[in-house]
Length: 106
Image (cartoon, rainbow, N blue to C red):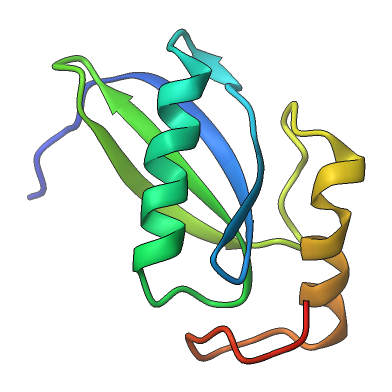
């Protein structure tokens, strides 16, 4: 059985290619800048699908971690600015990517 992770905050982060478009806290309390910084590092250094929402979480010990990936077209905004994340939603709707990579047009 997997270990239970004690989270104090969770944030959805809209990603298009290797760019973080927006991030917002929707559960708990944490420094939003730290969530954004962590998500930007993961987005820029991982082989992720092109248009996603990456949920990141803050553990009680202060470490950020990637919790899950969701299709940008099906995720809720959860406090993210729709004008900033629309490009990811449109890209996911036009051609949902099943493979990692950043070769599509922005």
